Amino acid sequence: MDTLERLVADPSAWAALATLVAMEVVLGVDNLVFIAILANRVDASRRALARTLGLALALVFRLVLLAFAAEIVRLTQPLATVFGHAFSVRDLLLLAGGLFLVWKATGEIHERVDPDAEGEAEAAAPRLGVAAALIQIVLIDIVFSVDSIITAVGMTNEFPIMVVAVTVAVVLTMVASGPLGDFVHRNPTVLMLALSFLLMIGMTLIADGFGFHIERGYIYAAMFFSALVETLNTLARRKQRKAR
Image (cartoon, rainbow, N blue to C red; front, side, top):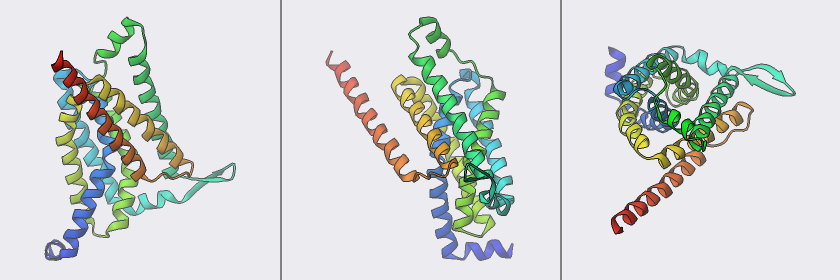
């Protein structure tokens, strides 16, 4: 209680909390895109349930990982050396997560560009159970959580601040995932753009796992610019439809 009272009365603690929440939200953009696409594969009547339960479980796992934050930071220590490059547990997690995202995005893109009409019909139909969606959401969230927790530990040593920041970021993701998922589902071109984002994020994770770090700012700038172009295209198509 004394610790909480001290943090509440400390302006620097509030500043650290605001900064950390912003960082957690930005780092959660990757996860939000993945969840929006994955949830759309679930039956419409259970889609909201899959999103909510998946993010709730992801929050629980993140809080558990935060409790072992010191051990998470140690995951950056070299574990094995292959062809002169030292790999840590973090590197292996990033490689596994990146390969999974590349596999997932490539499969989804292939189904949507296949000229076979039957294949397109099959791709359009939901074919993912709630349990499978939950498992995938939690697993990929753990991959994204490693860097998120390392960032949190680097910004503050106060465990309550980290818990509040992670909780707020996940709650905001819960709020945004529904509208984003519905928007992606209604707009096929936006869905293809989102899948391309997943492909790019997966390749970024793989590169990071091999020691080639790419600043997230460049990735987010490319995503923002692409989304802006797609928005202009959508407005142009809407204007053409009205003109007809």
